[in-house]
Length: 456
Image (cartoon, rainbow, N blue to C red; front, side, top):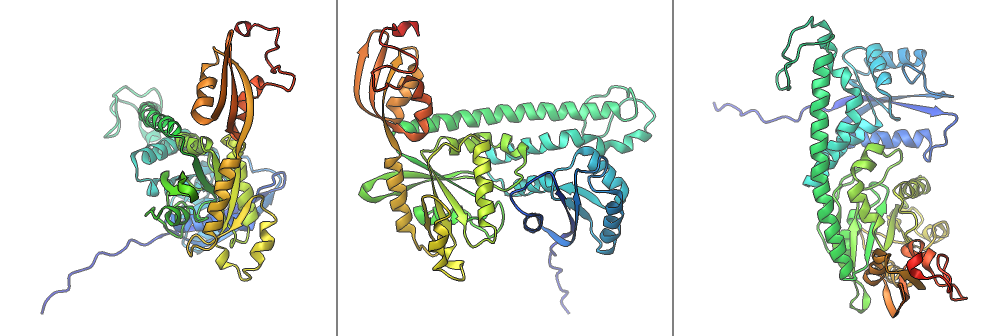
């Protein structure tokens, strides 16, 4: 009788217990209930099963354990009852909070926060060299202050040189675990410095690519939106592309640029960027700086909103807050209310549009409303140019080049010490040129007719 060959089995998913705190002096974009629902989706994306949740209202976090001592005891009992292996807090914890909570909950239960969970998801979904380097940098930035937690076993060490396998150095210990900790910190800092150099190379390449793209005068539209709003589905629909799509948070991280033909043989570049989320970790914003520059350099933002989500307006506001954080809130924007086909009352979409400026209802999956969206994109792109006349000193060569590269030059006059340019520029550049703008009386904010431009 033939033996059955054992089939590989999928390892069991970790069991997680969620903890949310409602701080009275804070006004989050999402309610505590919605935020915990989102945290559960993040946990599922990371491959974790949620077995329960606990909430508490506080005026301020507890200095040692974030939640109060009584809640810690309640959490311990519930975690043991549900066989939870990890406790996930909805807010970022200080290293001290993690340390004290793990001590109170017992050695069999790990404690992480929303930031660590998002970093884990990013690590799973980053596939390009740039994406993996960015995530690794963010992880080191997050974990470095928490490194002491990994070396408690060294406190039992009495002295001597060496160190654990795989570490560098062999200096004698100055105190319990101190040298090994410093050795690993130095190793991490060296790795961080190496990652930053590698990212600088990638950023330099991206900058050259953007400069080349500007010289071609092809307008760029950056897709922004809350994670899982449908940006990748939309870019696939617009460009007949094959960007990875999944019904989960942060399914795609790496920016993707595709050419799209508008009417009149007008070519536009659409760039799909990483999805936003409320409480986006600062470490990720810093690490993904180069990627997020794709947004800041765009001529137009296309904000994708999942209109079928119960808190669509809250997600919309969260994206606006992030755009402000990365200094991209000045760029002209239109809004695509996606997944309109999932509304119970499709006619309600027309009423919802009134709450969002320059918006159109679409279904990226079914193709509904795409023609209207492209018409709005075309109108906004070519109406986003503002007529302007500027008097620029020759020493402002960067601005002169910028006008020629990104603007539409109608007339140029050279005079002593500078140049007068008349034409149109993208609205997002107006702030840079406003100090040199020619006023109705022929003067500029920086220069009067009696002033020699060389003296400015």
